[in-house]
Amino acid sequence: MTLIKSISGIRGTIGGRPGEGLTPVDIVKFTAAFGKYITAKANSKKIVVGRDARLSGEMVRNIVIGTLQSIGVDVVDLGLSTTPTVEIAVPDEKAAGGIILTASHNPAEWNALKLLNEKGEFINDAEGKEVLALADDLDFDFSDVQALGRVTKDDSYLNKHIEKILALEIVDKEAIANAGFTIAVDAVNSTGGWFVPALLKALGVSTVYELYCEPNGRFPHNPEPLADNLKDLSALVKEKKADLGIAVDPDVDRLCFVMENGEMFGEEYTLVAVADYILQHSKGNTVSNLSSTRALKDVTEKHGGTYYAAAVGEVNVVTKMKEVNAVIGGEGNGGVIYPATHYGRDALAGIGIFLTHLAKSRQKISALRSSYPSYFMAKRKVTLTEKLDIDQLLNAMEQRYLEIPHSTIDGLKIDFEEEWAHLRKSNTEPIIRVYTEAPTQRRADLLADKILSEIEAIAS
Image (cartoon, rainbow, N blue to C red; front, side, top):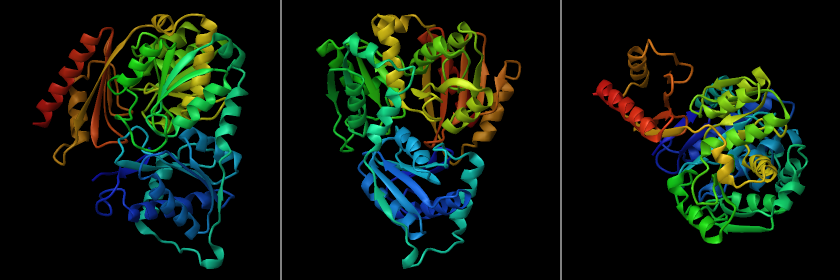
């Protein structure tokens, strides 16, 4: 059993003992604390709730909504929804905040409470700590029967979200429709199975091959949209001779593409391609996190802008984007943040912009991919143990590379002349992530292996 409390929310495996997994007791405690905290900050007693389709979703939803009612909070229940849709709904509803019930890319045994402020953006680290402290103390009263909150169900936000994307100046529905794309979609049997085909239809895409698009929560493969997990989508693209494939994670805030030849476009290059198109029309700066490809920096500078790096985590990227007035940003895991829609990762907005870019380029997706600087990544994990002191480990690694340019704003990133390595504790799993990037896959793998060997030597 695992329970993780971070800027990415309250995330854990379902079941087990209170405090060791995401149990009903933990759900009540953290929901009540957040509800009390966020409504006290805002001039509203309303909170928006939406969930992905994972198997525990209905159970968690019932507890969350009942808990919010018990502290006098009115709930707008979006039902099966997406993370970016809830982010849009919060300010539209003039709510105090929002709770998204999703563990994002984590496997089916996980669920989480993602916590939003009145802007529909993730609460920051300081706010999160206040919520956790309130949850530990539970120093507040629950409402009496006359003051219980009310629940309103609203299933209109799928269409509202799509309408917002169609209204973007940067999205050209006519160009997409005229391109005559045939597209395969893998939505891992979650809510993207409704939202992505509906968006494609609204954009004028007439031929959509749906794969795992029934939102029943029975994930047919690991839900993280990586190459090893998308073999069925790649096969379908080739079988149907589709122009491309689209894959999203269970809560539809990560986006990646499969090329017409069945190969991956590369989740790191989702943001690169979208940024390239945005920067052609709106000159400005870009932001991604420290674990993202250097290709975004290259594309940004080609268009005369400045690239900035932020710590990993959507809230950190958003904070940096506002600070430098970025026109586009996100994370290399396929997360696109376009401020003209809202400050949150949004796969649906990413689809609209990317398809416009592809349609107007008048080329195959593989040709578009080859137009960008080519870097290769290796991604490794080190499982945390009680004996492993992460701070001591990172400090020891830093000492080894004092003469090399490096950053410690989020773990340790070492910037070699042509390569980089980033070591950090995950916000979503009990692991240390080790990412490397280099001009060839072999060099990225060798650097990752070298870093792992050094970690093992320090930890032993």
